[in-house]
Length: 207
Image 1 (tube, one colour):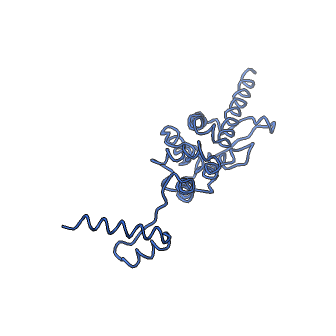
Image 2 (image 1 turned 120 degrees about the vertical axis):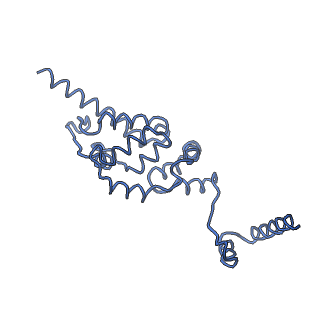
Image 3 (image 1 turned 90 degrees about the horizontal axis):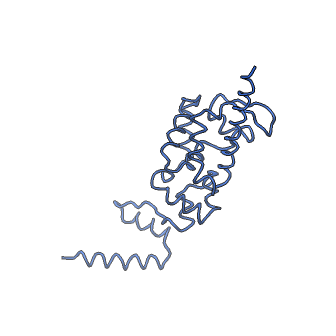
């Protein structure tokens, strides 16, 4: 008879963890420092699978981690796998736990999850983008929230904020094509400055 109250306490304890995780995904200033370790705990201890949701006054269960992540609050997290990956930043433990959860170790669908990640995450969102993500969170919260919501990439938001230079590709095998590309992105003053810089560079290279 004593086992049932203990089980109920565990389910309620699980809900405390999930409520904290829900708060973390909603608040950029909180999540940046606390979400990775919290998410790691929720995954490694299987807190997401079954809990007594206080606001719903009933027990809620999920058969897969992705189902839990994408389900609307208060039952689920109301987020996306890609969003969680961005918020984990460069935290290796959190990324490893998340990777394991979505690739089948906790009931995830590996094929569909990989497709979701490739579709949403920009290459700059991982690796060296940590400094841009933290700069956005600290100085450009509106842009950072747009990144977390999947509305902008870290690259695009950083360019808009002026902390990362806008870039484009140029066909180096076709001068005419290169000129057309530059003309589309430069105004007259920039073109004049570019020409002057090219003359200086070529002059320095003369024997």
